[in-house]
Length: 261
Image (cartoon, rainbow, N blue to C red; front, top):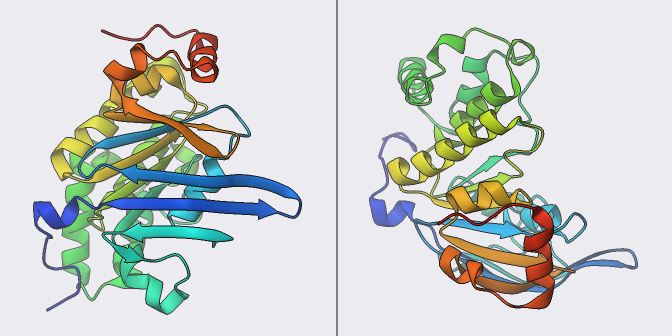
């Protein structure tokens, strides 16, 4: 039986990710200073913070694009912190990544971009891959773009393709890095709706790293505030509206976005 031919159950798809006392420095610049964080399974977990707070560095540790200096990264209880590439591969298959600027392969069509992971990392036949890719493009309402090149797409369409590429592999954990950066307000709202719909329909655990508070109020189940390399607050949206912690209150007020509800 091919590696990707069996769809995981709902419980298997609701990944639990935890980081414990994570630290990362580049030379004398200590970016992460003991981050502890738990992504609630099946929820949209948002990490906010000002520019330079360490959000993207934290994301790179979570998906193991980099190795932290110390601390632990646990995926469903498995310590993946210091695994080598071969041992890390089965855990990486449970993770999908939507990069800040979509990070599509410019030389590949939309279809081939979305199919890439299936071609490289599964034993599915070409027919099976085509069926899965076209089904995913239809789900995200971009099936008319299958033969287009990334250069022919708008920013919002590129984000949809990036989400399709991450989802087609049926991950248990989906990580978004600044998904609305550079988009106009209408397209940003469309991407937010897509994130919420994806979480509900696919049952994945989502981590969204952003500084866009309008987006946070639209999508978040839980919000964590990253300040100077540590998580200084975690709570629900209702709790966030009532927060009095001075640094977080200042950040929220400076965003200029009134909380919904």
